[in-house]
Amino acid sequence: MPKEELVTAESEILELLQNHPDGVTNEELVKMTASLEGKIRGETVNNLLSSGKIEMLPGTKQGSFSLRIRRGTQITDASAEEQLIYSLIEESNKMGIWIREIRSRTGLPQAQVRKALKVLEQRKLVKSVKAVGTSKKCYMLYSVEADESLTGGAFYSEQQLDSQFVQTLVHLCVSMLQCAAVDAGAVWKLSFDCISRLLMSDQSRRKFAEESHVRDPAAAREFSFVRSSEVAQFVREKGVCRVQLSVTDIESILSVAVLDRFIERRADGMYRALGPTTCYSASSFLPCLRCPVAADCYPGEEVAPQTCEYFSQWLASC
Image (cartoon, rainbow, N blue to C red; front, top):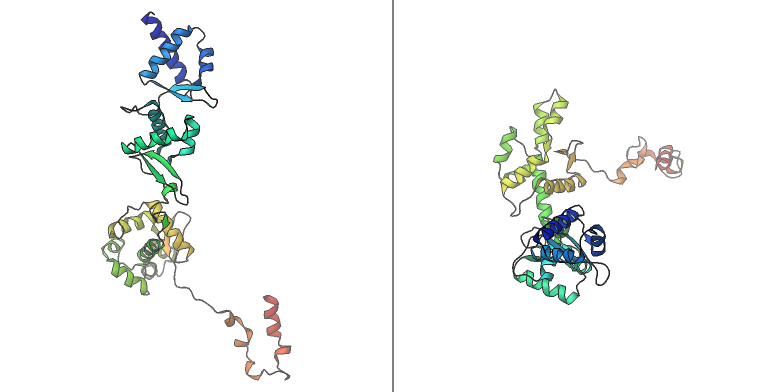
């Protein structure tokens, strides 16, 4: 068979597959390359497969298959099944791929899939990751770090939410916002114990801002706000946790503090500590406690609970 014909056929098939990144079935390939002889087409496809330029995927029907440009990395000393499974895992990136999906997309029996996965794991090419909230495993490349939606992120340890770690971070972040400092830079020099003591005191960055701008309430409010990136930098510099926390992680912690009404969040994403709030008992709203003639109020008398207009108004407003 002339070499020129094979080169021309190879270029035609490669161009066709490049225009169809999801691949084409064998039937589609035959129709789209009707100008090629069947023998030339078959030999060209085999050459492209053996050279690793294209790959073959099992089709939905038994015995069917599709061809596409190879997307994944070619690994050495791997069987066709191992290479195929590796390519699918590589495509999944940090989200990983479930074993059921591998079976569905490859058309391979479960025993064959598990055998190939075991070999790939032993060669430290892929790894299994157990997702939070399930006992099922998904597979990804050995060097890839799993997505937070699978691991739960920095606040999960062995698939369990580390609530103590979260509360410690909430305390630290709120402390930073409440910390009294002469200037913005001084806050970074304070120790964790110092911050804790300041948290227990009535001093705060908010209070300092208000006292420094007594005649300018707008400025007092503005200077009491802090960016989440500043809080994240503070937490990193204090070195209170071994894991690397991103700004997004710190914003999650600050959201908890907002819900606990320790701090408030402005529309532009800046935060500040809330002042102390006064809690009132429900009984403190009883009209009897504020009634000017309560001392003269007795059942059956002229001033009596049965005829009290204050009591009637209070009950009507409830």
